Every structure is written in structure tokens, then in C-alpha cells.
Image (cartoon, rainbow, N blue to C red; front, top):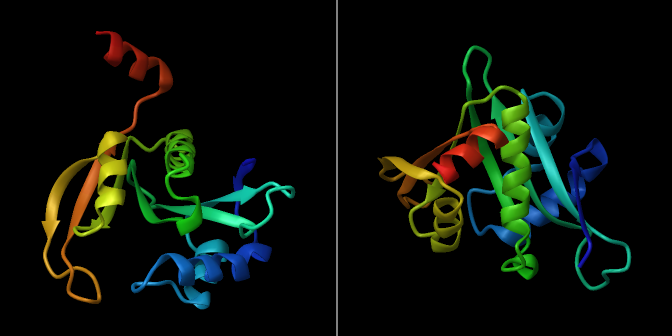
Length: 166
């Protein structure tokens, strides 16, 4: 499967909304919230788009949104979504790596996120990618599910290589 990662555009709004509906059972973004993230927020959204020859799957297979706050070196992974039919393909890892690179390029030193405590797949991915729990969030989601606040220090590629070698 050929997948291209690119910055989301206004024309992606409908596809992002459909992806939210397919991927999540609750805590979904509305069209208005997605529009705001694409057009007004101090944010960056990357989308994973399938190649034209990869029939049978939707055009957008995933997306991730980073929020940036002025005056801090901490970026927040605000939303992260992979289409159910594309899960297990390595797309989540690839998308997350691209988002980390974008955060680092904007001088972020830490990438934080919140994840449902019952989302074992996402928890596993985040832990494999180096995120560590910071804080338990009781009754965090709309259905009462708890969550974890997690974070990962971001290192330039050269420094990351030195840490692995050293």
C-alpha cells in the first residue's frame, strides 16, 4: 500500500470527519471542531493519504494533530487516528514519527498526549515509541473512562543516536 503523509488542507474536512466517525465510538470531533483545528488553532495536522491505485480503502487512512502553545517547549498530540482497516500496517508508527519530527522542527522538547486507559493498542504503540506515563486521569473521557497523560522527550536525530550508542 502506497501512503503519502502531508499537511492537512481545508478540502480534507469531510474526509477527516468521516474518519472520526469510523474510528471512534465516542469523544469524536465535530465538523466545527475539525474546521477550527485546520483553520484557527495554533496546530498542525498531518494526514496519511492512500495512493490512487490502492482501491477498497478510503482516501484518508489516518491523521494526527499537534497543538502548540506559545511560551512553552511542550507540544501536545491532541488527536491521533488510524482507520480500522489500516491498523497493524505500521501506519500509526510512521505517522507518529512524522508528527514527532514536526514538533522537533518547531523547537518542542517534549511531546505529551492523553490516551484512554482501555485503549491497549494505542498504549502499546505509545510505549514502544518511548512515551511514559506521567499522570493518571480518573473519569477523563465523556463515558467516564480513565486515561493516562503520557510524555516523551524529543531529541534531535544526532542526540538520539548518541543515547542509543552510549
